Image 1: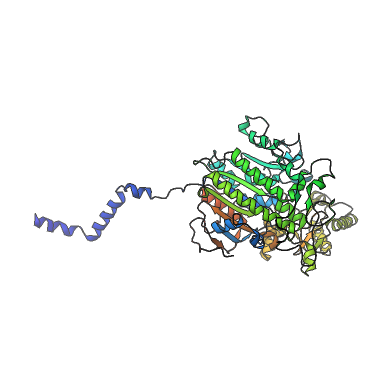
Image 2: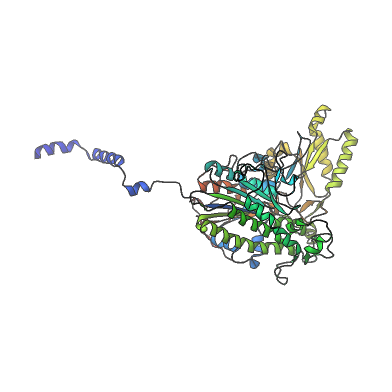
Length: 584
């Protein structure tokens, strides 16, 4: 027997024994503990909340830092991840395109929202970005254009659409004072989008949303009808807007003088106080629109968002992820009217910081704790300084005389070609009558060159670019590349007027605006907070606003929106990131 063992052993080499052993290990069933360690989809948050602050420049985080509470912006930065170098990589930087880009992960060249409005060549008139005449309003007055709204002009899917496609039982709600800022984030498949009708003082929606809980009848959910019946906005019309602390403003509008506006032309002074009740005496109907320019507009929005969470039971189920989108728009209204360095805007932000803190606490409680709640906060665009402020400090800036410049241009074209060749103008873009130009056998390129030569003589104009050539010109620099990403051929003009830094189109009503590819309009904050978000982290590497949607999709283990960027934000998905701390 021993001899037999000696004869057999050399026949099995060490290498063969290793191979046989490896095969046995591979084929053997894994212990239960090892099987459980296989990669599995991570649990999802009960509620995702996308907060978009209208017209919030990046520097507003720091400008008012000492005036903020510990529960709002400071809490987000203390407990969340902050992207300090986030940019809009396109222009025009307006509300409609901004919200569409955040939630689709794409630029206007892909999603089609090329402005808040555009000239529709097929229809022969201007089109509002959320316009849909096939639907009617729910709530408010009988039939008003304010309710003829839907996401039908948005040509790709949103992160909220993809959530509904992946989990049909998830609930998606959009909220804003502005219809477009409620509709585009909520997407095509939303349960509802709600916005404020300043004529009636009610929150309304559109018949685009079926409201199955209403059994097909054309009325709003019961919780909303009850809320509208309380006339909550009316309480603010009796108030006088006074600042939180008159003696502790960070800065006034200018070192030398105030470049600001009145809340209403009936006021006999600039600055505080703003007596809403006295302003209302000059009108026959309640002036709910005045609330939009004050901190009360954001209070209305926060109160409505809380009511929607309760009424729609958002974040209440452990087996589904709900999505709430909120746009706070009074920061934009006040910014336009008073300017970004006004005391009014500072007070709006200080009040909003308090509302934000209360909202975070409320949302955490409703979701069962911040570990079940994912929040991201960003802005839809920034804002330019008031041109008169810039000029006073010898900085570049001014107002482009849009009306007179176009009037002179049209008169010259009529004399030169005996035909009105311009169909429309919006978003600093000129729409030419291509059909007429072709029918008259005119040279389109020559006409564009002649228009360019004339407009370059106007103050503030640094270039006039054919939009069809912008993709080829994109290599010339980041500004032209941004302009190219903002062009959607069927909805954009033929010529783009590029104004200089600090220059705005003339506006007799507002102090300032936005829409350009310059840093003051493109640099905004991005903050993530809550579910699986590392605390006390800051990133200074460049990121784009279009990275938000794919990041959220990846966190939820769902498909990216159809035209989305495929780059995700660093530091949230297991990617190696350098820890940082918030030092103030």
